[in-house]
Structures are given as structure tokens and as C-alpha cells.
Length: 294
Ligand code: SF4
Ligand code: SF4
Image 1 (cartoon, rainbow, N blue to C red):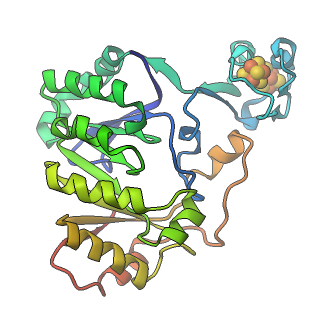
Image 2: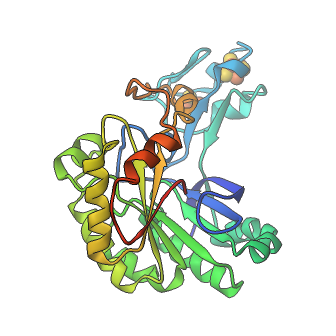
């Protein structure tokens, strides 16, 4: 079966051990205010528009059957993502993010860098979006990777049915499991869903996974303080996870929001630097390994 992939990034060094290829699957059950992949949330291919490339020729308007297309962008609520305007946009100002691929086609891409994986203990990381939402496609991909002896990692937000984890746990070398907060009210306010199911899945996965690294996006206004980060570390200790990575907030995704006709969340700071996050985590007394960065 085909899955919807929105990017394949080669030579990634922040998505698990060694040099990796990261495959980004479309569709996410969360809607985090700070999301750095806003193009990942919708499960289907969707239109993007870069105004800097637009030459104002108007060809995209002629072919649009819904009236969504305009010279200055497009109306998201009218756009079906059919892609007709992108075929006419020679300036490549309009383009579709996301394409349906067969597992074999993805494998052909990731296999290209196998010599780098071998030299660095790297491999393939499936990210998103939430890769476990496309569980049939993901499972087939993981089996294919296994046939080629490729090491695999999964980046997950954890908000999927438990049975999806059960299906693939044996096929994955390392889970990079996002825990954003252990405060249900706060989690709901900033991500659109509560954290109870996520924590329960993480706890159950810790019993059967080969390795889990908890990853914490550190976000101003949300969890950038000793109390919130300590609670996450205590949770990791309780369930037996031995590594927690803290990822400081950045604004690299800001441009993508304008390409999608969306407004970027503004917490009133540019970015967090590593040292300010390290200052907080140095105050957390623990026996488990804490690190700033992925
Ligand atoms: S993708 Fe299709 S519906 Fe959307 S603006 Fe382009 S032509 Fe119109
Ligand atoms: S076809 Fe492309 S370059 Fe021409 S108006 Fe539309 S978006 Fe701009």
C-alpha cells in the first residue's frame, strides 16, 4: 500500500544515532502551537506558495476550478490540493507538499546512503507528523528495512492507539518519544490533546522497546522552567527510561507558515539558546542521562 510522505532528508544528524535518512510521513493528531512542521499535520498532500518566486503571470488562476488560486496566494478553505495550478506555475512559486509513495520507493531512496549508516552506526528514522498514524505503511517499511539490515528509529508524539506500538516495537532500534508536559490541562491548551494516553503508551512501551529516548521540546511560556522539566524527568525515572533529550525552541519554521497562508504562533522570544536550557536541567538531580540537543 502507498503512504503519504512529505519529505525525505538525507544526512540527518539530529534524528537518532549516527548519520541517518529521515523520512517524514504526513498526518498528526496533535496541533502544537510551536509546530516546526506545519505541513505535516494534514494527512493529505497540500498546496504551498512562496510569494518571492511568484512572477504574477496569472496562469495558476486560469486552471483552478474552485476559485482558490490567486496571484498573491490561495484560499485554503477553497483549495482541494488538486495540484493543477502547480503544473502551470513555471516559477515554482506554487507546489504540492506530500506525495503518495510505495514502501519500495521509499526504500530505494534510503538505501542510497547505506555506506554512511554503516560507518557511523546510523540508519533510517521515520518521523512526521506522526508516523504511527500510517501504521500499515510504516510496518511494511520497517520490514523492508529489516531485510536490508538497516537500523531504524521512530520519532513519535505518542498519541496513537497502543496496538500500533505493539505491532512495530520489535522492528525498531530506538524510539524518540516526545513528552511535552505531564500536566494534562497545559498539554491540552498548547497541543490540542491531553497527555494521559501519551504517558500511558510511553510507560507500556518502556517495558518492551529495545531503547527509548524521551525528547522534550523546551518552549517559552509552556514548559521552559524547572518545575515542568523536573516533572518530566521524574516520569522518565518512574517508567525506567534512561535518557532524556531537551530540544530548545527555535523559529526555523516561521517561513513555512506564511507559505501555507497561516499565522505563526508568537511567544514573544526569538529562540532559546542551549545554555539557558542547560542552566535549568543542571538543577535537576537525577541518575538518568540528560542532554540538551537531539
Ligand atoms: S491546488 Fe487545485 S484547488 Fe488548490 S489552488 Fe491549485 S488548482 Fe486551485
Ligand atoms: S502561476 Fe505561479 S508565478 Fe504565475 S501567478 Fe501563479 S503562483 Fe505566481
